Structures are given as structure tokens and as C-alpha cells.
Image (cartoon, rainbow, N blue to C red; front, side):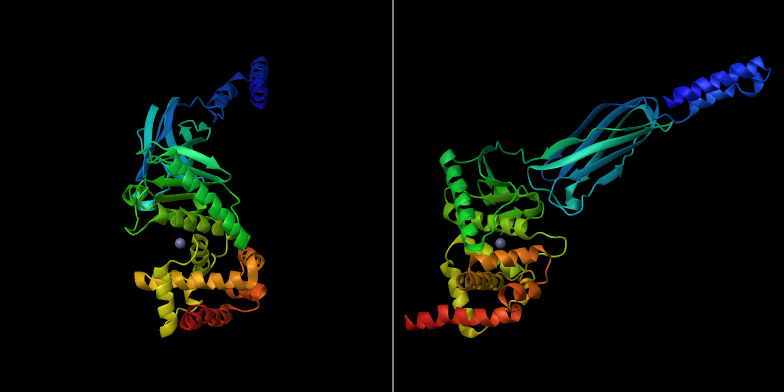
Length: 386
Ligand SMILES: [Zn+2]
């Protein structure tokens, strides 16, 4: 509307100028208008797509045309996950300027780290031509999915379970275990899921490792907490282990959803201790490690177990066993309400000592002393008496 008005005024000036004998001063007015950058570009997108090459890469491709040469093509993408800061990546693409161009970008995840299966990536383009005309496309979504298998799915409450091997009864059993595990966890800690979780059940560990770029060989299951996705390798032969592992990983998901904040994570002993506690009674192999560590007085402090566990698997197993016992102590002696309050304090971003002090009246060193008396009574004195 505004431009039309300018054009009209320009023509009027030309006509008036012509009438008053000043025509040579004004004829460029109309031409000037035609050369000015136009917001209404003639750029059009011919094709736009993103193709997953799971789990290594995501390939983005675009073809576009315009009446005048296209000089700039940019890809923008962001990954859908829980985050306190939305990250949008912008990539300037290489191509030969022309009125019809093709450009592509390979997001090589071997350098950036991969995404779990099922993750949605949102992407769009901005394309500029030689007159400054610019087109920003609509956003498109692509599922970065593990298409090596034909997934079936089953859903209940906040859980969607995906599997490709084994009967419906096998999947139903795992789904029931997940639902029951969440219900038991809520009874003992007050903690529950707030968002949907996807569980991908691979038929064995080696299939599962094929979905990851940087997996450790001993990885049994992984909770990608900010993506609300769990991957795990379970079949009929390891199902007893699988059910415990599934509840363990789900508990990490609940812990994350209950406490995530921009400032810090919950201490590792609490995260792993709750996950071990939710699995059920401590397995005998862990119990033996705990008893022997208590008897020989070679224990990790609560403070040291707030950081990632040892890379030495024997020492790490002791840390898991101790963490279980500390959570067992807190829940059995102080109840679920205090545990709910502790998780709420961590959600506020409290320091570890402040959160413990506010809820239980002791800091991490005080917790260690109180737990030690409890554990010695439970595992040493009682076993000697019995
Ligand atoms: Zn764990």
C-alpha cells in the first residue's frame, strides 16, 4: 500500500515535472523504485528434506529457484529436548550462485555426539537473492529414528514402550514392570514422572550398542533424561535382569524430571541410590561388597560419592551398594515425605549441604555418620547375632 502510494506520487511528480518543463530532472524516480530491495521476493523452494542416517548423521537438502540469482542459503535447526536454553544452530551452505540452486548440509554426529532414536529435529531455511529478497521457510520436523528395525508400540499412562522382537506378552510384561516400578517409587519417595517417556527395547545389548556412537561395551541400558528416552537390550533370556534394569533407568528419568534446574544436578549417590532402591532388595553380590567394605572400614564418604563414581568397576560397585544403603537409611528412618522434600529442595538449585540441612537437619558429613551407625547395625551386628 505504502509503495503503491510512493509510486503514484513519483508518477505525479514526473507528470507535474513534464507539465512544468522539468521532466529531465525526474524520470529516474520510477526506475529507483524498481531497483529498491523488495520484501516480496520471487524465491521459491522446490524441495526441502532431511534424511536420517542413524545414528551417524542427518542430511539436509534444499533446492530453490528465483528470477534473479540466489546468493545465500542458510539452514537453521534445533533439537526437541528439555533444556533451559533453546539452541538453534545456523549453517551457511556452500553452493554455486544461480537462479536455480541445490545445497546440502551433513550434520555429522561423530563430531557432535548422537541423538537417541525418536528425537525430533526442527529445521527451516533462509534464502537470499541478489536483489536482497529473502525467503524464510516454514519449519519442518524430522524424526531421527533407528529404522534398522520395525518397531511396534504399546502405551499406558506416561510410558510408550517400543519393541521389535518378542511377543506382545513379552512387551506387556515389561510395560507392567515399568508401571508397577513407577507406582512403588512414588509410594516410597513421592516422586513421579511429569512428562511422557519412550522406552526402546532392543532384543539384545549388541543391537542396542548399534544405536549409539560412543557406547561403553558394558552399557546395559541408558536413560537419555533430557530427551525422555530410555534404550535397553532385553530378551526372554535376560528378562529378570532386564526388569530390574528398566526400573533403574526409569528412576533416573523420574529423578531428572523431579529435580532438573539450571544450576546443578542431584548428587550421584542420591540418583544412583534411588535407582538401586527402586529395583527392589539389594542383590546378594552387592550386599557382600557392602558388608565387606563395612567390616574393613574401607568406605566412600557421602561427599565423595556426590561426584561421578569410580571408573574402576569394583570400586564403582561398592559406591552403588553404599548409595543404595544410604537411600534405604533415609527412606526407612525418615519416610517418603522427607525424600519428596529433599528432591524439591534440589529442584530449587540448593547446594547439597543446604538441601540436606534444611530437610534432615544434618549436612553430608552428618549423613555419613548417621548412615554408618544404621548400616553397621543392619549388616554387621545383626548378621553376627543371626
Ligand atoms: Zn544408574
